[in-house]
Amino acid sequence: MTPIKFIPPQTGPITSYSVRALQTGPLWLLIKDAGVLMTALPYLPMLFLPIQKKNANNQPKSLRLLSMRDIAIQALLLLIELILLILFLPALVSFPGILFIGVATLSLLIIKLIAWPTQGPRIVESTMDQETLRLSQQHPFERWIFINGICTGSTGLQQNIDRLSLLFGRKVTGIHNESYGFISDLLECLLQRCLSYNTTDVRIACEVVRDRLVDPEVKKVVLIGYSQGGIVASMVVDYLLAELSAEMMGKLKEIYTFGSAASHFHNPPRHGTTLLPCSSTTTESSPCIPHIEHYANEYDMVPRWGVLYATNSLLTNRYAGEVFVRMGASGHMFVDHYLDPIFPLAGHGKEVDKAKAGKKGIGRATVNGDVHGHRVEEADSYLGAIVNVDTDVEEKQKGVERKSLTNGDSKKAAAEANKYPGLTVNGKGKKAAAEVNSHSVSAVNQNEVGRVYGTINGIPNDEHVVDVVLGRGKTVKELSRLWKYLGGAAPED
Image 1: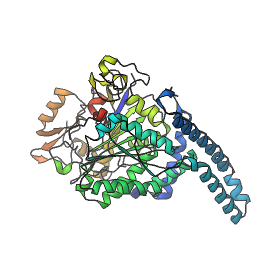
Image 2: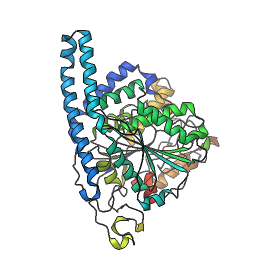
Image 3: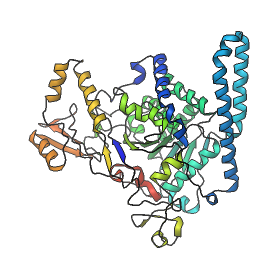
Image 4: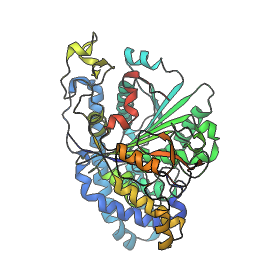
């Protein structure tokens, strides 16, 4: 079984409000991000590995041909852009200014022309079979939105949202983040991350999400971002937090990202300075967006530059949400390397007992013996894996918090750390409970992550969070929320 590392969500008062763009100038951010991207380039060949065997009979012939066409176009674009990148500096030095501008413009037009067949409508809807349509009609007040990643044409986007509909029994709206080749997409990622560059897909995504949030008939919005779509999702959240009321933003119940390239994710508390989970009885301190989860593969180049770098190295930067890392795993393909390992469909490399699958046969797989649409979850699967809680990242974040609160004074930082001795406990079960009780801490909530939030001597504990690490021994299924939607099911809010 592949080990899963779990990075708990940030909760400190400093990281709750930290904005990366306000800490560093855009030019320096661009240089730093480009440098981090270069360090991730050795993992470039692993974007497509391992290569998954596909059952060609599961796709219409026309769709397979379109997919092959898009792959050929992306390969051609990569070759052309590599040549242009190599020739850029010699041309800049050798050509007169007007000639250089003309050649550059012509090159961009050629790239756009080659990529044109892969483009399609900017907003598309998932296609559903009768059973998936029936399941989706049971949730008329929900709206699911997906934003694709790099090197994805309109065919790939349609395949992605169709797969999400099949898994979760919901109609999914896709926002097409158009691709003009691997290198062009990476350059666009840099501009979005460092300069907050509002590309067309960012503007469209903002409009689509906003329309759903202000619709009085809509009660829940779920946003899913993959790869560069994680950057777009984080920018959408930034703009809507500044524009909409907390009540309207509260409809954006959940965000899920896969292989995210985003460098930040903001999710401020409704009130106060310390974030508590949405299940907390102290509702004022709950985050504006109740649930955020990020899924990444350890050797995937994109999240090593995005979510994994941000949560491990940018300690004064806000990156809201829980992170699940599949250790030792590579690959960046949305279906092959993320959805298939986490939520494998029946018949995709897994043998499913027809008797357990119910009257509808092999297409309706089971979850723990119950019929749940088109999916299968086994005891040794991703969801059944026991997580390894990454306490190192949490300790580093707390160190940054103490340094910020004491203005870098080491003695004050030490006093801050020892102010409530025993409140930071790396223990388990009864030992942890004993530590909490010994310091007159009344626990008001123990969330799924295993932290205990409470009061000290009757005073709400907004400044000091009791970080009792109880996540050890838990499975992904016990910590994650997304899987609860499998087969058209709905988790309790």
